[in-house]
Length: 289
Image: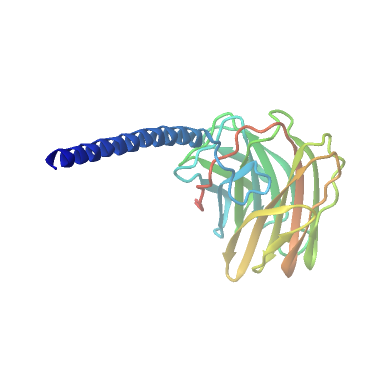
């Protein structure tokens, strides 16, 4: 009897050791799989900007002011870093339809050019400029972008957006403008001349005032965002929209405002090339000087 009991105990001990051995092997296999999966995830490219309409851009900084002055600056937020070789597009709205943008500079010494500028012919005093720069020296948190005007104005609103797919040289192709000198919900530009190549990105900027409204872009454009300056119950807003082109064509912007008001608009088409990896997740926020 005792021999049989010892045999059964020995059998249970053997089975227990077998089960523990199998569990250990399974654990080692799972650990190896986990390491492999972790490596694959780490190698995945960064996700494009959430809500990005072209998949090739992200906002660096935007802001507005209703303090009179002949210049306006924005500071890149902490944690935001741009990439050398990519391009910045600056959309800038101010409140004097006779003033001019005389310079755009940043603390890293990049060179900006005004691609198109247009004034509103009505009484709301809207002046819109779209500018761009190729980043030879990337911007990061604490760097400043400053726009200087020919005269002092009260309202200033600016957006700065980074694109990763513009051609390294001669990136500006065609432009067109429009304005509504009387209150209307419709916003349109003239058509550009045909683009010089099939692969381009169209960037549209719209300025409107003097009350609160939202803009819904049409004609294949997707809205990116807007920023407003407000004072004494007057509100002036600049909005940006983009559209990827896949064939050589003339481009015209159209959109609808939620409230009838005066507006000014411009569209620029930028020649593109195969993009570098898309910009990382958005971390930019409002920071005005």
